[in-house]
Image (tube, rainbow, N blue to C red; front, side):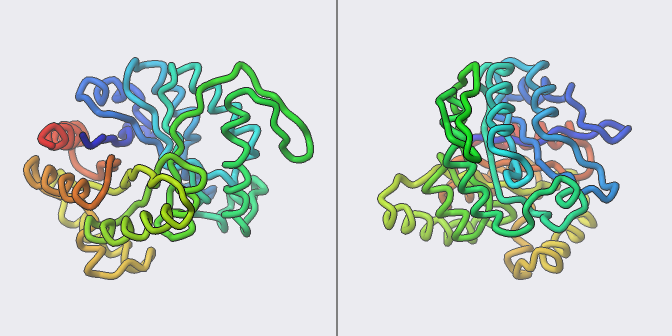
Length: 291
C-alpha cells in the first residue's frame, strides 16, 4: 500500500499547529512531514527537529518525517545526537529525509557558517558517519573519536533531490530516494535512471517517496501562482509544471496517487496549500484509502 503523509497547518499566529498531529494520526496518515526551511530574511521558518519533538509528545503511532533536513547546516555529531534523542522520545518513529539544502545563499546559511559550496561532498561525508554515530559506535568525526549514547535505532534515511547526483547518493547511502515537484510522467522517466544507477553500483534500488503540493480547496488562483513559480523560479518546463500540483476531489486525488504508484512511488508527501486545511486533510486521507 502507498504511504501518505502531509505537514501540519499553521495557527492564526503563524506557528505550526502541533495539536493537529493527533488529527492526522486519527485519520490514518502514515507520517507527519516537516520541512527544514529557515531563510533568515524575516520569512517564517521553524526548527524542524523541535517541531517533530513536539509532535512526538502528542501522538503515539504516526511516524515523524523530515522533508528534508539540510545536512550542510549542521555538524554530523549534532545531527546524530538530535536523531538519537528523537528516536528515544518518539519510540523509533523518525523518518530521516536529508538533502544538500536549497538556500545556500540565504542570510541564515551565512549566519550559521554553513558551506555555500561543495554541499554534496559535505552531505556524503555526514551520511557516511551518521549511522554509526546514531548506533552509539565509536566513530571518527573531524579527527576525533566520538561515541554518542544512549544508542538508538538508525531511522530510514531518504535522500531528497531530483538530480542524478541525488539519485546516486540515495543508492549509496540511503534507504530511499525523495524527489519533489515532479509529475507522475516525470517520475517514471527518472525511475528508469534510478534503477540503472543501482545496477551500475551493484546496490538495491531504494524506495521512492514523492514530495509535492496539493490544492484541494478549489483555489484556482493559488494553483496558477504555484505553477507560475515552478516555471519562473524553479525552471520547470511549462507542460511539466502544469501536471505537478494535485487538485480535485477524492476521486481525482486517488487517480493521481495511483499514477504516482504506477510510476514507481512507494509513498507520497503532499503539503496542503490554501483553503480549509482539515477538509483537505480528510480528502487526502480518503483518497489514500482507495488505493
